[in-house]
Image 1 (cartoon, rainbow, N blue to C red):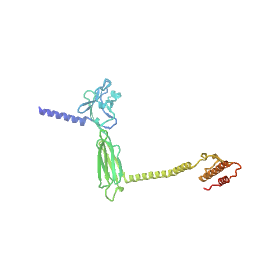
Image 2 (image 1 turned 30 degrees about the horizontal axis):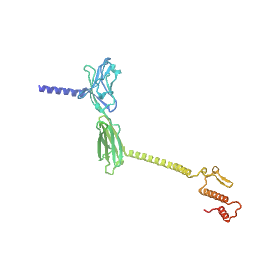
Image 3 (image 1 turned 45 degrees about the vertical axis):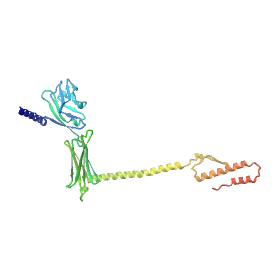
Image 4 (image 1 turned 180 degrees about the vertical axis):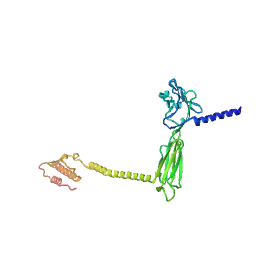
Length: 330
């Protein structure tokens, strides 16, 4: 009894493996993109279709009958992400479309269309290698790529045989640490033949694709040339801006140091009246001082005259008046 039970279990396992390797349709989907799981049947206007994910438990993805979706049993993980091509059901197309594919979507799917015509799809999710960056930093060449799934492999090759040391680091990233970042560096060989006559190639590979980046002496020369051109342009711009800035600075300094005639009071000197609006040029400091001295002298003389009464012959008053009329030495 026990022997027959074991034999029966082995037969079930072998049947499952045969279905997985021979009957399943393998589909590879790209992470965060839409994907189609194919399924076909004999077209019918009253089709009955159900999709499910075969895991430890039966996960209902989508059911369709009576010409409408039946979503009461739909798993929360697939809500709003799974749909059929309803306009093609009459032609026998029962394919399932998944949007925003996630890594949790990987697994074995079953498409049931009634009878014994069930289809099985093995779904794998990939984040392919999109870009490989390579650069020279001091005495090392660094190659890197990011956002890959599953874990990638990085390999180096050179234009001629040489001995070099490489160090590779793989890190996981993303919200759930599902994506892989890979980075590798090569140290230049300590020989007379350095990097100047060699070409380095870096290839990052996964099960779905691979990308290669190449760095050679020509790349370095082009990079240096571009840097020199950019430096020359920057220097030219700076040299061109200096005269403009100096000119504007000098103009502002001239305006701030100039004394408009409108701020000087009109000065009457006897019959002569100085007014600011008649001046064509701004007087310098010496001229302004001379005019003020003249005004003070004349005003002082007038005040002294008013203090001396007409006909008064006081000798001290005459001396004061005479001193006021004489110019003052500064």
